[in-house]
Image (cartoon, rainbow, N blue to C red; front, side, top):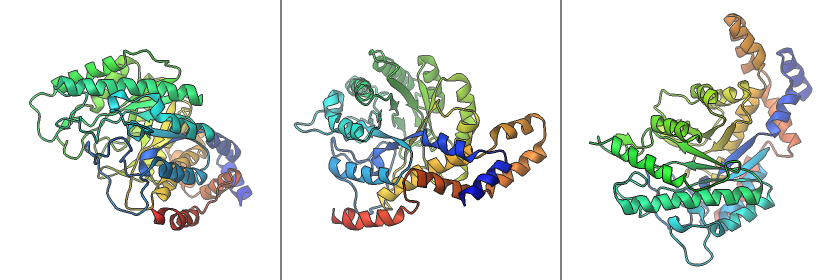
Length: 409
C-alpha cells in the first residue's frame, strides 16, 4: 500500500520519503495543562482569567506523579519529537510552598529530571491567573503598585527558571508571556493599563538572560469570559511590543476575531521576524480551546510553515483543554492532528504550485489542489507511524489505561 501511495504522490511531484524524514525532525511542544484541567499544584485556586474548562470526565490528574504518568502514556502514543510545555503553576514543592514571586529552579527540578530522562526540552509560561494576587482582573497592568510588583517579580523569576531549563536539558526554552488583564465593560482609560503593562514588561526583560538559550514570546488575546470589552494585551500591542523589544511574537489561533485566521498572518510575520511562535488550538465560536483536529485551518497553518521553508523558524506548541473526554486521548488526538497537518503540507508539490501561481495558471493550480485532497495521505501517515514504532490504533491503549489507572483515581 505504501508503494502505491509513493507512486501516486510521485506523479504529483512529491517525494514521500523526504516528507516522512522532514516530519521526524519537527518538534511539537506539548502543554501539560490538558491533563489536570489547568488547575496546577501551587495554590489550589479555581481557574480564572477569562478562561474555562468544561466537563467532569473521571481520571483527572491531581498530583505531579499522576500528571507525569498521563504524559508518559500520551507520549508513548505520539510519534516524532516532543517538548514539555509547563506553566509555572505546576511548581512542585517538597517543603513549604512559596509565592509565585519567589519561585526558583529548585521547584522545577523534578520536571527537569522527567524531561532529561525522556531526552526532551522544556518550554515555560508564567501563570498570571488563578491566584489571589490577581486584583480586579489585573496583574502587570494593575494600578495597584503592590499587585504589579508581585507579578513583575514573578515574570523575572520565570525568565531565570527558563534559562535553567535550557541549561539543564540542552535545548532552548521558549517562555511565553500572556496576561488575562482586561475589563468586562467599556473602560474610561485604554492607554493607562497598556502603558503600565509595557513598563512592567520592560522591567522584567531588563534582567540579564542568555538569548541563545531563552526565547521570550508575547501572546495577545482579543477577549475573555468576563473581559469582553477590552484586553490590555491586544494583537496590536503585542506585535508592536515584540518588534520594539526584539522578542518573538506568539499567535494562538483562538485569540483573534472569529473571521480572522492565523494562517494568513504567518507569512507577514516571517518577513519581519527571525522566528515566530504558535499555540495551536481549535476555537469553536470563541477561544474555547477545543482539542485540535485535522480541520482546514490547522492544515492551512502548517501549509504556510512548510511552503515558506520555515520549519526551523516556527516554534509549534499545542494549547487546549477539554474535561469532557478522556484527557490522555485528547493529548494524542490533538498532537497527532498537528503532525498530520504537517505531513499533509509536506506531501504537497509546493514549488510547482508556487510556479503555477506566478505564471498565472490558476486553472492547473486549482486542479492540483483538488487532486491532493484525495491522494492517499492516510497510507503515508500509517507508514510514518510504523517507522516510529507507534500503533495507529491508540484508542484501545487509552481505554486500557483508563480501566487500569484512570478509573481508580
